[in-house]
Length: 376
Image (cartoon, rainbow, N blue to C red):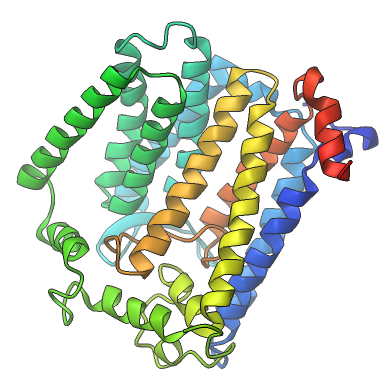
């Protein structure tokens, strides 16, 4: 792999990178506001350091080797083998066997698998861009996504499985599929969901979906988390209660404040103004990802960037939705905010790959990118 020279360091999108830092800081402040014996702040600080180091390391490498079919096949087979190993060697927590317990830290393989699914689909659609109208490509690409989807779903990790589905569906939509075929996909999805509801979903999963329709139907049961989260978000009002003064979170009425419900904890302490700022920063991240994707050197680079945007947007939308009582509680983390090393490392490696591809952006767009960066 080829190292990038000093002359190419400007190919790192500093606007994108700098926009992630306040998001990381917001997550840290929310965790640190529960002072005392709380270990999350220090651990997250370590993971941030590791993730940023990974971002720059990947950015300074020529990652175009990921376009090779052989490389992706071996990565895909290896990832599926790791997911299978979870059923034998994985650590079970809260009814799900989704983690490898490595002593001092844990690792969740489903996070990097999402990034691999993006790479696999980007490769598949980039080679078939001209003939994408053929319906068989929806089926074949669906098989690539279905295998990790099922392995993650059976852990059971319903949230991560849904993210894999949204990545596939989102990349199908941006790949040039016809409206007729899109309608067929919607119909097939409805039939699959009906089958899952009748024969696959466990009672607790059905309860979560029912809570999505009416979150307050079972406040003392499945709706408890969503109810407490909506209270936290609403109680922040305009300016919030101040860092460390969120009663719902400090008094532990709000569960999993550092992961699933970090947005609600943040909203309680920072209020509507803080939430608007948070949305603005995430919007900048998405804008820069899409801007870099659209000037990719080829279809593969462009599709990877779009897939990365879909991945992050799906996480953010679902997490915010479940924090506001608009979506079921599925254990989805908020990008750059939630505690945890696996998802944070995956996000920054994905951004690092995008920056590596940025080095080889289409020549016709290089001057435009430079002018945009310098504000000319």
